Length: 272
Image (cartoon, rainbow, N blue to C red):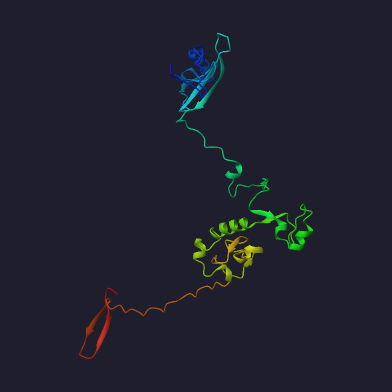
């Protein structure tokens, strides 16, 4: 028999429950297979007349786990009965990672057709629209917060400073910023491109939308110092043509015959 471990309250170990190893093993076999229930590891005293027996698990699908069978004896009773039998992980058991809330697991691009992504009321990326209203408008709306106001839009919430900073950082340091490979090879920046359409609001100072249907960023937000080869002022380089090379006279295919000191006659050799 394995060791006996007392609980925090240190109840008196019940001899009948501690010795009920065979009863606990039979209960473990009922939830597994006989060959999967291994050696008796220990007995843990849970409380008065309440003991949990641990058995080695030889289930190939659960290495490092063990079977835990809790037995109990009622007051003034002689028979020991099984309270529960479960399979529990041991210190070296393979276990799944800790559960993470879905909002923390969510990644860009996960939202599909028909999916809903509710925004919490305390989302730091947003703030009430009336926070941007003039002072006189805020006084008029002070008694009716159910109808927040923003100049020309009337949206309940707008981007907060944190929301704008997060978006600007994400766009500028991504493929839409100046550090992308296509921007590094561009002939000029988007700031001088006729297809650049500036954004509205505070993000207008750094970003715009590309309106060139042939550009890779068409319809996307890009920074002013981004760029690509479809710049409106890009000029095709003139094709440089080299002058024709001078003719080469093949003197190897001719024989030179000298008739006298002043006249030279060139005859085509038999090889030519």
